Length: 285
Ligand SMILES: *[C@@H]1O[C@H](CO)[C@@H](O)[C@H](O)[C@H]1NC(C)=O
Ligand SMILES: *[C@@H]1O[C@H](CO)[C@@H](O)[C@H](O)[C@H]1NC(C)=O
Ligand SMILES: *[C@@H]1O[C@H](CO)[C@@H](O)[C@H](O)[C@H]1NC(C)=O
Ligand SMILES: *[C@@H]1O[C@H](CO)[C@@H](O)[C@H](O)[C@H]1NC(C)=O
Image 1 (tube, rainbow, N blue to C red):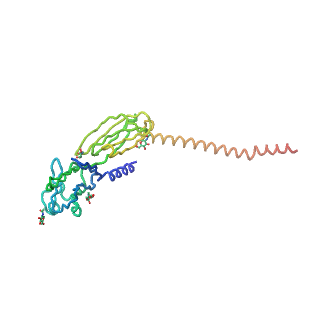
Image 2: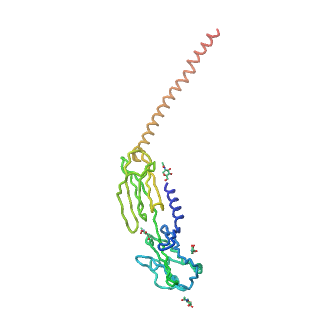
Image 3: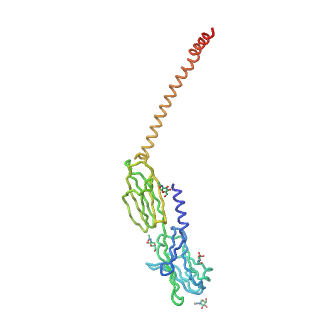
């Protein structure tokens, strides 16, 4: 179950990271989604494809404003140009070979949750007016639902710690119907969200805790099964007792059977065979 969830998760990230939703006019231009710790390319290209090797472009993160990457006529933050924000030191690179084609994309290494936000790529010297591209970077931490049975009465708890963006957490029954839940924890710490919800179930069966992010972006679920409202230890205890009873009965039966078999075989040797003999003799005198 855990492994499946992880596979699903990696699949989601692989298919979604780097995917853009371009909007022709106005801003924002693109949204890029990435899992924390992964690298990401922030795209920015002039549609004229003109050579920008001797031009100026600047990447800035908005609110609060931070200098991410500046390039000016072959000088840039990675070869001596000063002014880069410490947060981005050593983590940003550009594509020198792509500059000829008007491509000012940058690569951001080992993304952190703090990198989440809106970035602008600015060409201040382009005629007739400066060009600005906006890119929304969403850095996510996947939800991992932990499910437990709290009481014999069937109180199920689902705990989803440290996810970002904030997940919605639901309990589903075996028909995938949403159950009424009570949120017992809903906190944010440094951009990570901790959500815990509980539900009470009356019927035995298997239930899913489903954690979703950004609607379709992410969906991870964990399953838990309730057997007649009994907790696991009770199930084990009952199993052990049943084993003893069955074992005892089987042992007893075998013992009795073994005894009677012995008795039967003795009977076969003496009683019936002599009767048969007498019958046979009486038929054929
Ligand atoms: C770029 O730098 C070169 C020298 O390295 C200089 O000759 C050229 O004028 C500069 N171009 C611009 C647009 O500043
Ligand atoms: C710009 O360069 C990056 C990095 O090589 C690449 O992924 C992207 O597709 C390029 N963009 C365009 C419009 O060619
Ligand atoms: C991440 O950035 C996006 C785009 O700027 C923003 O919509 C979203 O609220 C941010 N999420 C968090 C958890 O800060
Ligand atoms: C519940 O949803 C899962 C996947 O989301 C699906 O595989 C399963 O068949 C659904 N079950 C029912 C009873 O609809």
